[in-house]
Length: 606
View 1: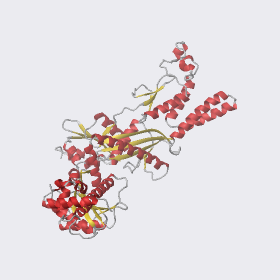
View 2 (view 1 turned 135 degrees about the vertical axis):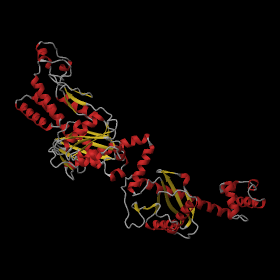
View 3 (view 1 turned 180 degrees about the vertical axis):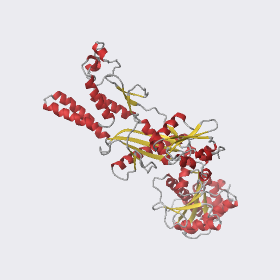
View 4 (view 1 turned 180 degrees about the horizontal axis):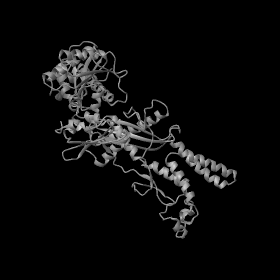
């Protein structure tokens, strides 16, 4: 708890929307937040329940020595002020917005006969900047479209009326090629040039419909006047813009000036995607990464991102599409929409697809450099999906194998930190079960496994997986109850047919998403246990078959057969061995019997 008197500080804070700042003993701002009710929000930080359950918040509160605040008219104003203050002061405990790229902008220069080009530097000289563009290729596509549709100058000459009237300039090669109309020598008026600039602004703002309509009217008029050369040029422009519009339109053009946001959150990071839609055209899109500092909720993170994007893109949209309800004032100038179907839902789905793709790429990139991070994420996800109370760092899986009731084997495979630990694999030759009784075999194997672990004081696994349905699971639980450890470990059964997961005592199975990483690890455990069990079972069966073949030799019993196989490794080598070699293992009489037995096999039959 902070040593300063927070109760006195709270007395000064009103029930109004605004922004608050926490200062430490060095008089440095360590946290900035917004609220539609300052008093309620700041008071919540000093709630005993919050401090007892959230270690990060407890650490922040312990460093607070002063609280200041700024009152604003609406919560929207609070968003904007919070965003600007965070950028200025960069407090330690605020969400870190990771955006290490300098995205390019298209600039319409503030000058006579404005040039249009792309830049990464914003100069406050009255020029109009559109963007930023997260997709460099999209920006160049738009710029190429503009240059192909509208002849514009590319030179950096000072085309003031005085300079042009003085005849200081001559047309260049761009004029000869038809890429410029030669305003430097009055071949194009400034009004005509400016009309093109206005149309370009409309295109860049997504308002292509009006431009296309105007071009169509001009084209028809030129055809009526029999000015076919002009009509052809206008038709070419019309086709270019119409093609651009058809590629860009993803929803009904009646959806105008809308911002779309979606969020994908992880334990330490969150990712937010933004789409700017004008007249059914996506004119801007970007995804940013947010690093959590105080276990912020998705709503808090999304509100930070909304403020950042709307400030960055200077958005004035009155409607914002979001994936869940946002807690804002009823009288807010911005309307938040959570669509359930229709064109707006398609836009939200598109945004969510983008944010999930971005998140997956970032996580894969980071986990390649830090494998332990992937392990912790997988285990945390498993703990959440399987309702565990601790990370399943040690998992064991049981599977039974037999051949028509013969040679029964029960195999155990072990995973540590979501990876196979083959040195810990074990199998049991079943001793107390006769015939094909899978339930009894499972009961014996589980009992023997964990009785030994208890005797040797080994740590029990956090999760036990039984390959089978309710019957096998019940048999395993009988053994765990006998050992009095049924409450100390989590046990689940997995049935092969539909990959159902069963918990002891639950009537209905649980189903995980087929693409779930948790299910994939469980399937890997199950398949590995099956493979290992089959391998052990096959070795036992083959060994038994080989021993039986050697026992057919007169004077050779089970013990001697086993000794021969141990020494020679296979029946083939026993068959090929000389009497002297055989006498390394058995006596001379047995060696002669073995030699004669296999010699008779090789002799031709009459």
